[in-house]
Length: 244
Image 1 (cartoon, rainbow, N blue to C red):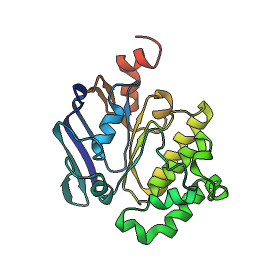
Image 2 (image 1 turned 90 degrees about the vertical axis):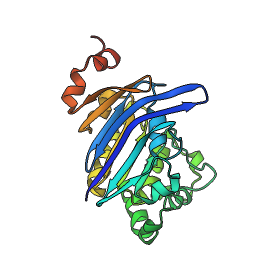
Image 3 (image 1 turned 120 degrees about the horizontal axis):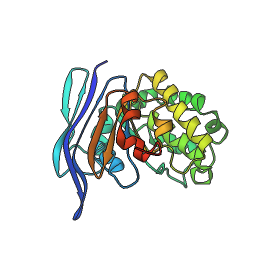
């Protein structure tokens, strides 16, 4: 099925602070695209713009899906979710005083996903067996790794076509980071997803990426059409690979 997300010339501000400066990216059906950058360079802001959480000051965001073109630049977040886009936010953003299963059910907000609640819940539990064991546990009492699993499973409850994942490695041990990244790739294949992942852990991110962008000070500094191009880029060498 056809899908393309195109963000063009996105500027965004928090008061007087300019967080994005003409950022442009494109994500096509079936890809895993990584948005690389160190803390404070605009990764999360761009993801929030794509989800309607932050309103761009200028620029356009267009989602083409199944032959229809939607300008989502000014759409509400729930409308964007309704088109088949889901976000796993940085820091998980779970409801800590609700149970695992209650958090999952809140992920099934999208109208077209409601008929698939039973199937999606069964798949979430199959993908993350620990959630079955803890389905009555309060989300806030779980470990960081378990909370990340729950956040990803909650996003899948909306039956998304495009999955945005913001900083999945934050707060996790190296082993859990590797396991989480591998699980994202597994779920992508099983669900037939398109994935845009914002991440600062270069080595883990490129394990599953098809290509990617580097964002520096709110602007796209480099577009790598392959992982090899990313690895050979001077910015990557300086920031992630220990030298020029």
